[in-house]
Image (cartoon, rainbow, N blue to C red; front, top):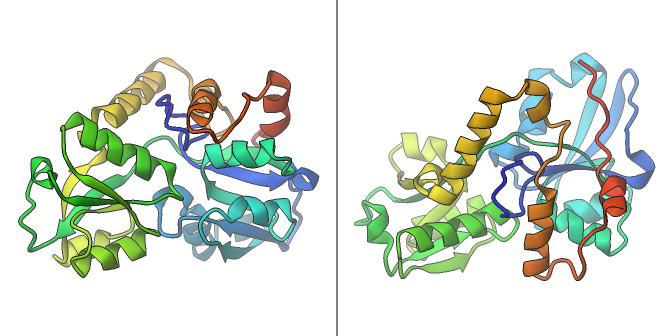
Amino acid sequence: MKPTGKGNTVAGGAAILAALFAVMPQVSAADLLKLASAQRGAWESAAPELGQPAGIFAKHGITLDLLYTRDGEVESAVASGSSDVGVGVGTIGVLRAYAKGAPLRVIGASTTGTANYWYVQAASLIKTIKDMDGKTIAYWTSNAASKYDVFDLIKQYKLKARPTVIGGPAATFNQVMSGRIDVGWAEAPFGVDAIEEGKIRVVARAADVSAIRVSESVAQRLREFFPKEMLSPDKVIGLDAIIKEAMTSHSLQVPLSKAQISELVQIPTATR
């Protein structure tokens, strides 16, 4: 998990959820797994969409029934039983839902790192980060990293920019191209084709923000000094920092106890 305190990651990305009655989903040959996914087009939640046509799930006798939800609906889809598993959800959102009694369990996590970037129209006069001063910069409420990253960007470069909530990558792209928003936010692979076609131009990346870059360098040092088993999605570290952030943002009224965390996070032993 990125030890940043930003609250959007479990073991470095978005959490993978299962309902209480399906903490460890057991699938047999040709089983259908109903999966709810948020943030379609975002790298951290792309595994189902990319893996299904590639035949990766079929090799294990699994067919995915993918449901792409609207903002904040993955937790409720899984808790209600309409979906077996949910991916691409923020950890703070999971903590909040669990604290309110939702029968959810964290059973895995996505990868460490971020593919976030900020962009403008190709013809925009904004060429550098400093040029964002006084401009509108989009962020997405469904992806906690989007919000925290843009505020970190503004703070580090002392910008007098105006963070503006937009519904998602596609909506943000339309707002940027129509001129309603000066700077858009996205996460690869979304927008890569538009960059290659010369429609938009990248003006900043997550690596330009020290609060993000430092966390990635920490992850790199961990990779150098600890065995791979300690850095797999089978492990969860840094929840204390995320719980503190959840308390600060009033997503939690009281911190979760160790017993509650043990109940919530039930990642099964991986079979390789």
